Image (cartoon, rainbow, N blue to C red; front, side, top):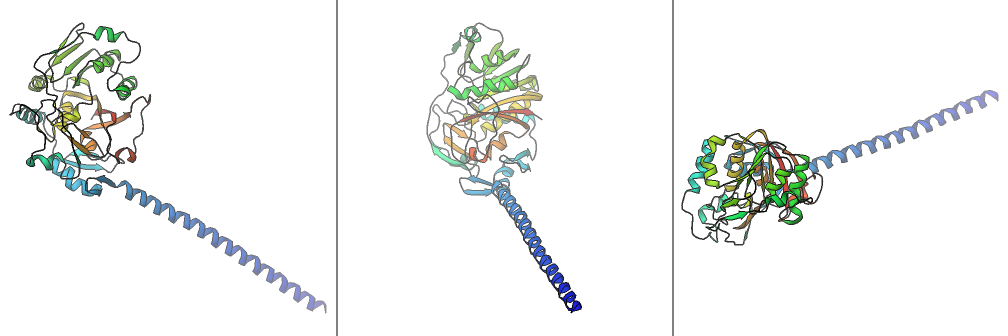
Length: 357
C-alpha cells in the first residue's frame, strides 16, 4: 500500500515538472518571438527610412540619388561622394582651374547683352537651366537692369552707431546677423556679392571686419568710410589673379540666385550661380568662410526672377566647401535642416555658413 502511494507521488511530481517545463518553453518561445519580431521591424523600418532618404522629389517625380547622379550631377561635372541626408555631398569630376573659371565667366560677360532681359528661356538653354528636366519651371519677369547713374551710400557712419541690427529683407536678413555672431570676422578682409544697400557691409564691420569690398553691377559711391570699397563685377573678375586666395570671407544674401538670368543686366548663363560660387572658391583663402543666403525649397526656376535651391542644386553649390551651419530668419541659433524643407517650392531664404576645403 505504501509502495503504491509512493509511485503515485512520484508520478505527480514528474507530471508537475513536465507542466512547468512546458510552460517555461512556451514563455521563452513567445519572448524570443517578440524579440525577433521587434528586430525584424527595426531592420525593415531602417531600410524603409534609407529608401525614403534615397529619394529626391523632382520635376520628373521621385528620383533616387543614383538617378540624379547619373542624369543631373555627372553631366555637369559633379559626382556624389557621400550619400548624406538630406543633401548629398559632391565633388568635381574634374576640378576647374581658376584661370578657366574666370576666363569662361568673362567670355560670357563680355558677350552680347540684350537691351532688355529675355522674357523666355531660349530652347538651346532649356535643358541646362532645368537640369535636364529635373527642375520645376515657373514664368515670371523683371527688368532691374542697372541704371547708368551711380548710387551714393552716405549713411554708413550713422548705421554703424545703431544698437539694433540693421538688416535687409525683413526678418530673413537677421540670419546674417546671427551667423556673424557665431562665426565672427574679426580683423578679416572680405567681399560682398550683390548689394543694393550697405546693410551686410555694416554687419561685417560691426562683427570686426577690417575691410569689405562690395561687388555690384550698379555703380556705387561710398562716402564716410575707407573700410568699404566698391568694384564692378567685370573689373573684379579681370583682376582675379591678383586677388586669388586673398580674402578671409565672402557674404552674399539674396543675390547669387539671380546670376545668369539677365534680370539685373547680367549675361544669360544657365550656370551663372554655380560659376559665382566657383569664383568665390578661387578668391577665398584656405579655410575662408562663405556666408551664402539663397532661397530654399524644392528645386525650381522662376524665370527670370530667381532660382530655388533644393537637394540637387544646393549640393552643387556647396561643392568644394564644408557645410558648417545653417541660419534662418530670427532664430538666434543655427537650425537643423530636414527633408521637409526641400519638398515644396518656397521663397524663404536660408543662410549657409560654408568653409573652403
